[in-house]
Image 1 (spheres, rainbow, N blue to C red):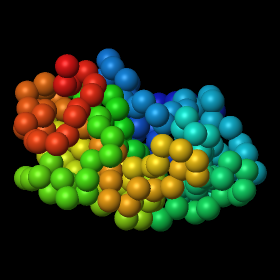
Image 2: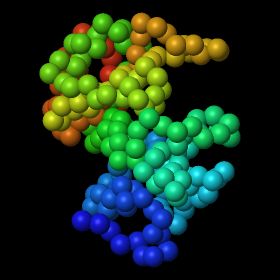
Image 3: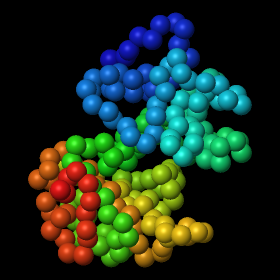
Image 4: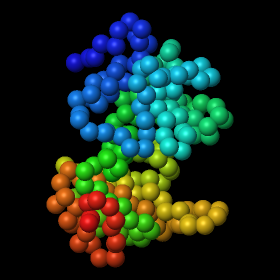
Length: 197
């Protein structure tokens, strides 16, 4: 089941090697915002091996002596914080969250009132991000066999860009365009994106 990276990369965690194998079996992109670095591009920063980063500059790393433990540097230079999840959990939860950005049929809408969550997610299961705090605290993700929906706290449109308490920005991704039909039928939500044209 493993993938052989050779002795030069024997320090790469097994779960990360499994990720490379899974990724190699797809002919499409699996991630949009976050980048998982190839073994040759993993760099050492302040004693940690940086294996992932996102468009905002946040970084994730492991240490050689604890390869299954993930560390996070959200403040870009303020130091590493040990995360409440292991490498395997990071990779799975990240993939689930990214599905809303890379699915062939996807859409988004801004400032959806919080009471719409139940209507949008009927018959779906919530993915537990409570230990993760990423992509941001207050984010909620739901999924079923064919659909993933992420709710991110909506931010005000002007400085100081505070959180708009009763509202979420919503992203949805699906395997088939027809899987989005029930979402487009919900009143009061205007969807944008390739799944709702």
